[in-house]
Image (tube, rainbow, N blue to C red):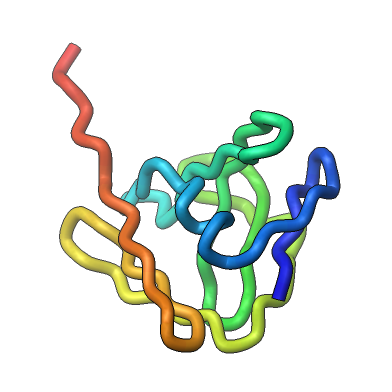
Length: 100
């Protein structure tokens, strides 16, 4: 299974793809991802069996494009999102923001 970057169309194995996730926003239920090839940054929602790409709109995350990833699972934690596919798993932590 190879997962594409929607900007440059490079394809990545699950380990390389999910290791490029940098932040989980629990309020909007989205993950920040930066393409290891082109550096494009995307926000995405990890859903059962697919990734949903879009953007925040009116206080929620609007999904506009979907990429199927059969067997993809997720589990929300207090300050993290646990992602699993087959026998592998990845944990994306919430980056704590400093008060302004």
